[in-house]
Image (cartoon, rainbow, N blue to C red; front, side):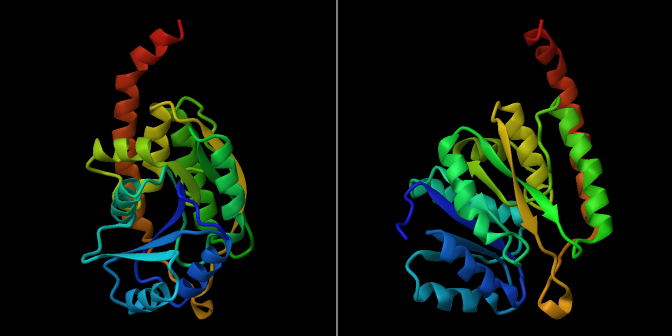
Length: 249
């Protein structure tokens, strides 16, 4: 496989459990390079990943001393990727939920439409918790409301290809987008900047604990974070509304 000089896989990782090595190997089987940002993990996964990287020049492990959240880990990785000349990053989780077999097709879609964000539209199977499937419908409605129907099919699914420059621009302009709120706020703020959304289907798998599945989702904490995020975005939407209406007249 010829390594790409412009597109990389970027994987934030925090105490991911036993699935992480399998996930990284699967991603490497479909793409090069792959970078993993270890976000202050203390479960031994950093050491295991570094050992793997020592044997694979197309795998890079970036270490954060303290846990800062998904968005914070991606921010660090995106900054370094831009310094190294990369223009696009496919983000995916390190716990095995996201489909490595779709990496190449998403990268191809991004290469064909480099100004766009390529968003995964999850295809759920029986492993998906019902509360997670139903709950995201609310987030999807709010996202399409504050983007005035930007055709974003799923606001929370983190399997995506982003153009790095506009994503870093919106992250630098906000003190937020550093934790679980990253995925939803990124698509809204990129949409406001005129970045179009292209949606591609992608299967998602939720592993049970006995299968090595690990979830850091906290129903009350993370939904409170999303509620606060949408309150901020609604304020931004209302402030933008007069100018938006003027452009359409």
